[in-house]
Image (cartoon, one colour):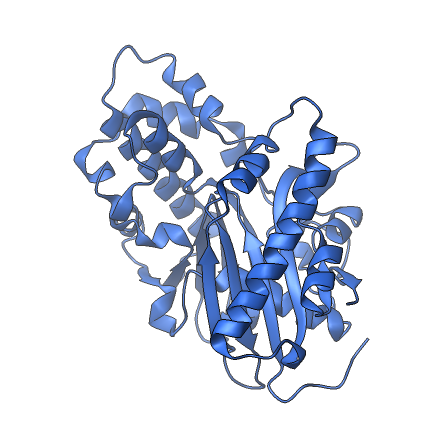
Length: 375
């Protein structure tokens, strides 16, 4: 479905992740033989009513189909309006944008069932109608239909950006959940999977026990010490030993999961629990990076978790032979790599190129990802 390229080959990517901390928008200029350029980007907090509606849909509840329908429309409208606002602020005309790649908000992700499914809301029809821009959405379902996990999809974009024939590299994204992409130089092999919780348990514990929305720069966790028995109990969860392909989400790792492990402890300091959660994320990431004797020379870190200095310090201690760098060292903004992924996936769709990696997701073959909504 190739179309004539517009002068700057601009695409917009947008996603609201598992942490539900806002909508990430990225206007990306793709160029041949060069890294993509981030022309504009923004993170917008959800209005309180919309945030509550989305949060309430992450677990089963009364009349949830009706509530989901309303939230689907409301989120689509919010995405469309925020795209237009960003374009106006940056002086970019909507008709100069080739397409929008919208991930939406995941409200269910169950690739492990006999009848597997994944569900993202944020009506692409409303986005296309609001912006007048061609919109591609529903990126995960086709991979699941082909027997895959539908995740992680960012590994294909990581390979596009960073694969190098001369050195083994890895990219980790620490959002609500964490995922890793391993880029092998020797056999051009790409491996990727969700490693488990990223910020989601830390953020939930901060809100519950430390009167804070997040652990800013890792300052609160730096005040504590990991609780060995709690860390050991958490690491025994079968998800961590399960071989890839695998993916996970808020349905599995949540505050109830943590509280189940805390129930066996007689007493603890909140800061020590937080330090344990930091160690859990660092340990599972380190185990993933070093799986199958893979020892990358360089690891780039993106996502909100890269701002947690305590977490990056723990990760560096666990990977002493690897250079741990934030994605900014590669000249990119780590807050918008994931949004840019969906701009790239929209571009791949328009050029009729398959964009999943079967070795990563477990799908039976390469597939085009996405569905088209014309303005």
